[in-house]
Image (cartoon, rainbow over all chains, first blue to last red):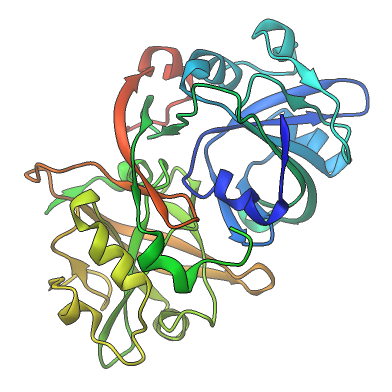
Length: 180
Length: 180
């Protein structure tokens, strides 16, 4: 898991993959599956919709920290499993064979099995809309991993896997931020 | 372009496709390309990051309406084209051969060439984070279209096309909202 420049962290999220969000409530780790995220700024700012219906929300509010981990298609059943049980009665890291790794700036763990991880601080909670705004403070990517295809939840119980990649760098040049 | 129940509208957006956002400023149509969106609620509520750097933002603020149109991979060069010029000096519908269709509840047009369209009302603008919160008031999907693969911007000038679809409806049953 190598450091990725923060200026590139938004490229881990912009395509809209399902992510795992790891938290630490002061006593133990937990992890949830989240599909409702977006990039807010090129400088590693993200928004995520969550609220009291997720057990992890209390830890997120209290610690004001989390790790966004980006899983790939080989992890789909763990991702769905994490999303369909609760940290209130389950050690999800143990149950789903996920390996917590110590992060640098936050107590929430990185997840070894994932393609990428972003350590985040909560910079705001827009209560009215259940939108949590996060600032990425460190990012990592496992370039050695063979499977790099992420998954995108449709919302009806099906998931779309990354297919072919199309290059429009030349047409987009005027719009790309520095460092990408 | 057939009506889609509003309870399913979030399934058009949850996978994170690049979208076109059409507006009407009282005089003319405009359209922008947006990748920074997320679902906020199963009841057809969406968030989108935009701000004064987009010419369409003034129309969005003033009219408090827009249409989110979901393009497919065959439209990629029009999508990139729309995203790399400005409505300040370009009639983008004309330039990119996009056909505006009258919407039902908003003055912004649907886009005929797209796979799906969602008529939206602006319900809030979170100025601090440049997040616009939208409520979908009508949704449409062109089921007759052969090409249904949407595209996902990575943020570096490349785009990921929808690949295979994996069905986890059974595992997810407890989490799916009614009507999906």
